[in-house]
Length: 397
Image 1 (spheres, rainbow, N blue to C red):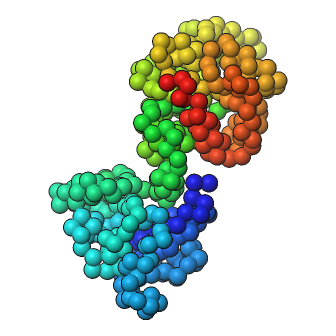
Image 2 (image 1 turned 90 degrees about the horizontal axis):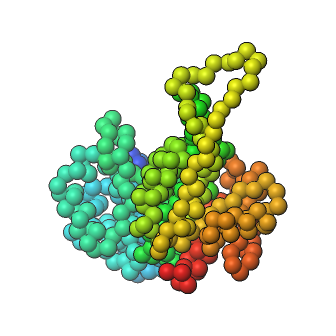
Image 3 (image 1 turned 90 degrees about the vertical axis):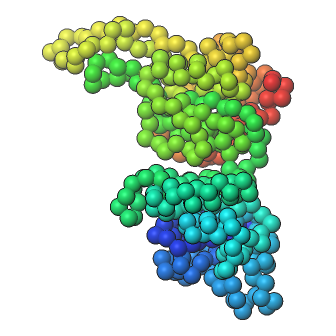
């Protein structure tokens, strides 16, 4: 796990989004991090230190003059062993303090005296976020190397809608994990396909494959964590876009093919995880096909383009990774697919064991033979796959 043993300081400022910090602390601790919490006085008006102490398992710090620090140097000592400070929520007022080097309370003093990186998750009204003063502060903080997680657009507690909403705890946790992950793909551009395609038979029926998209989305997230610039071409799935990933939505195999052809020439790696339908109706009916009162209905199907084979055949194309979901004889079928598609690496699994679930079992097949990644959560396996791909790249590109 990327967070195992990591020492973090989680800071809370005043704002209704402070309630989300409780879930963020839980996620970070569950991920194996050592989480120390510091809160502004305003933050304690929205969520109590007792709550954050229970979730972090450590005393919570709120006072610049706390007597528990014997030399009155809490603003220095509390951050010296930390590897990262995360302020979530970060109010407009707090961003202004950071941008101008102000330090009139414990949390702002900790940030000013830090030696470690700083991540802020802004949370404020849309007008406050868009105010020129706030944007000047944001620009200055970015120049100073502060990492921004968000904000997102959406409904706000004040009833207005727009930018300024704090990212969800899972998204902030992913941002933190990404910062600690080895940047084996830094500077690389990775193209990933995920999910099924839907091939219309008539206005209400489709021909498709069973696919949740979870593995492809996990691969996109893992590649982004590894420092890559990631584009995700996704079929219709009900999944949130991994933070920091550019997503292109498609429905049919031909739409996916068009999106991949557009992005592939500028990509260093292409990972084809999508369960693309092999066939589509030659002439989809413009009207709903009615029941035939017991008579057979015939559909003429034609092959869809082979997206992976096309990219693998490109001159000076990206390093290609294919996925093989097989129902039996995994090794033989994966080897045959690798040879037929002319790709350097195939990731294979037994389909009925993986579709829809959060776990998977993957084996890799390349010129050196079989490599078992084992069984586990899809994100964990995706990280292993990305690490393997990164190791294979120098001999290729």
